[in-house]
Image 1 (cartoon, rainbow, N blue to C red):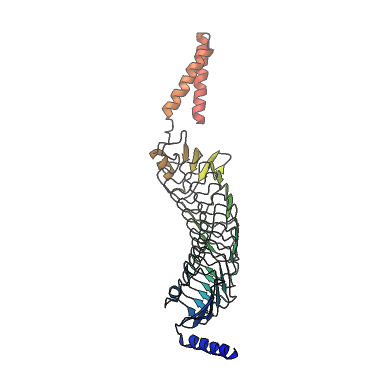
Image 2: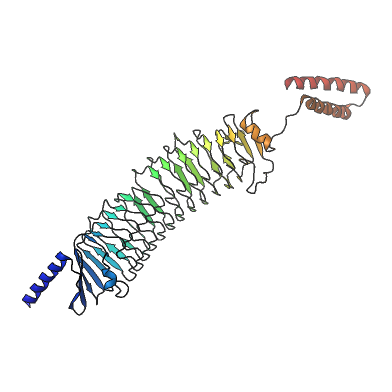
Length: 449
């Protein structure tokens, strides 16, 4: 027996060294084989595939299909014990695998486990440095993931993992685009790095902690996170990109840090629960982008920083409750001094009075005074100085009333005088006295005008 075991060990060493593609049965329930620098052992009874050896594990020789190690054998557990890397698509669509254990693996390749819909848990090497693009994409049963410190996650690495509820990302070095997109069970995250669409469509995500090292919220990063009610943006933040929080329908309030110079297109579009928008003291905000707050139907009041030079097209369109914009209590009117106001910037808002200062240089079509379908708001009033952009807009859109002429004023006072005479003069003498008094009063009033 000792001689047999020794011979078997020598044979396995030879297989590993020379990459023989020989398959043999050491026991009725166990298959042994090799692929370049690796040996794989499949326990047919336990449905466990163990891979030993070194280097990068690939399927370049078609060993998985050749020996029916995919659906036909229904591998449930995979143990990677030795190989430092898993190549692209090696275990893609292993639909019966429920667990993967990485012993010494450093890198997991593109789509390596994509579509493994029964995979529930992965545990791995503390030395793992990279999980590549789509590595676990569409693993809809995956609910437990332990990541090594300093790891890099590729684009769509865990996208569509709809059962993933919790994952520690606080020590992850980088996250690729859409890395966790569509993880509809994910409830809480703490991160120090972000990417475009990284958490888009995470509809249950309600607890987000952003590290102080984050200076940018990328495009669509939290798009459609319908469970998000509040988020504290770090004071170090400098950029919020397009649609970053669009369609976050439960978001109630947001404070924009002082370092933000631009609210990009559609940043908060469709945030139908948004009631409060505040800007930090000493705000550097210069631009509010197209549809930045489009359709924020509960937003009723906002104070726009004086630093803002441009409000782009439809920025506040369909904010149907918006009644106060830089509102002046004394004048009972909104005051806007932004140099450029885009087309339909305040379309279908609730206010009926706006003062456009001389600082306004350009006003786009239907920027004020119109309902959603382009009909005018009844009684809408624009206050402005002559020969300004606001004056031109008011006249072009029929919101301007010509001031009364001197003759109209005189005629008005004359009618008033005559009416007064008729009502108070019982005799001719009294009529003359009343006429003189009325003319005297008229002259005084005109002088006062």
